Length: 106
Length: 118
Image (cartoon, rainbow over all chains, first blue to last red; front, top):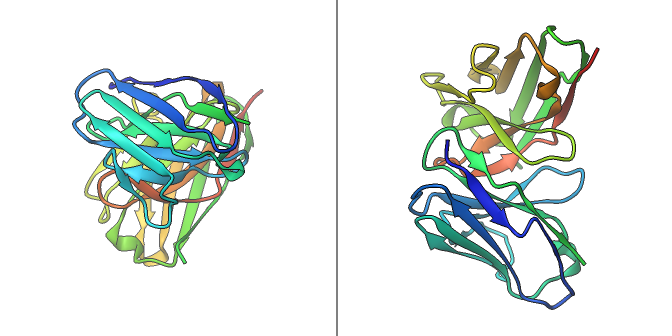
């Protein structure tokens, strides 16, 4: 199975900060990576697919980059409603695997 | 509006069985691969199983292979997960999630909680 390692596991930031989360795959997954946001008690929400494509309706302050084994997720200016846990997910190979999550706090 | 609504969760004892359902609406269900993804309490997301639009292909995580069976009824716009020989480690919220075409899960249900405990 492909292992996805996210860092950091948790992150404290302030409104307006630029926030960056990294995700490393245990092998080359090309650009087969998605990012999700999950708020407490809610289902995950797709934010970015194919490593860098913004899902329809998602604010442009969210972005993703990377390919191969190293990927980055960025919030350019943190808003209060962005407080959530973020997960990366690879879909290069079954089983699809997720990172362990990054909990973002104010 | 795309909607997925899970049901069937509950408290069961180890070794028992449970059948989850996911009712879909707001899109052409028979055109999409649908997945089950679970989340143990306080933990991360785990992909469980996937079924192709016409049930030609079903895939499972190793942890559930041989115990869980995914199925669908396109006439009823419904997805199912038959879970047998349940274990404590199967305790989780189970979500159904629509696969837009390349394992990007663009719509999710609200989840149903399965608790396996004696």
